[in-house]
Length: 105
Image (cartoon, rainbow, N blue to C red; front, side, top):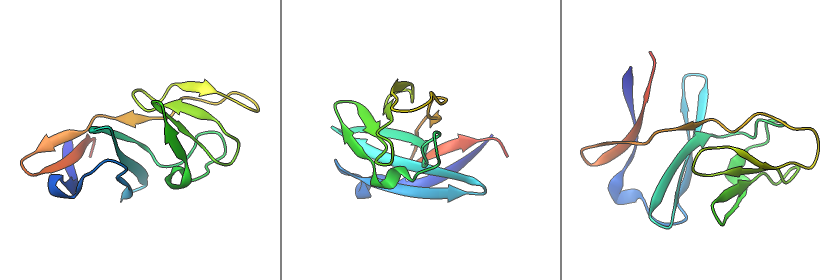
């Protein structure tokens, strides 16, 4: 496992959202109500970018087909077409003055 730094703590604030690319993996780091969430950056239904998604009441909603996923664990909460898998989420790692993610090399 290897630590990949993502962002400095000083840059984080509520409504923060930024996409990061690590090799072939695209991740989305979000801060809401003082809590950090890290997930894949595209909807597993049709691959629409979640950087334009709406976030409220503990869920993220893809703007393409309104699929909703729990911010806490990525579980699928609502579908409008066929079901899809859950949104992959990742643990945020605090390392000194930064946050990052541990990934297999």
